[in-house]
Image 1 (tube, rainbow, N blue to C red):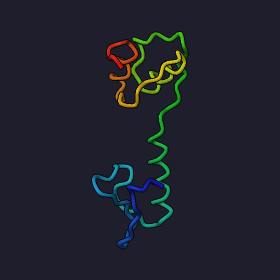
Image 2 (cartoon, one colour):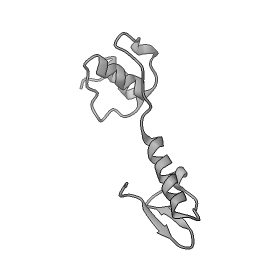
Image 3 (tube, rainbow, N blue to C red):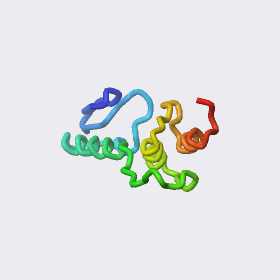
Image 4 (cartoon, helix red, strand yellow):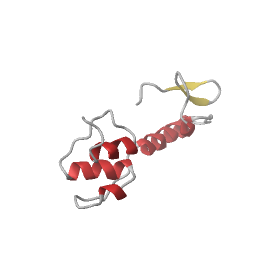
Length: 99
């Protein structure tokens, strides 16, 4: 389980953490199982969608992070972890950074 979040009970079950709680986990739950289900859905929503991009795809036409990373992998390129946004990843892949 994500260590930032803690399930508390104050008459209702609520997810808590220092800072802002994700919208999917905000609110209160009557049953612990409902809170657990909200957690599962939240975790699933954080996973990157699958991409079907292949090596021959046109880099300029790609816009999603999943597609850009899949294209880089297919072409044997490693994107530095500091590039998190799709626009930064695309700029790196097109030679815009001197990494």
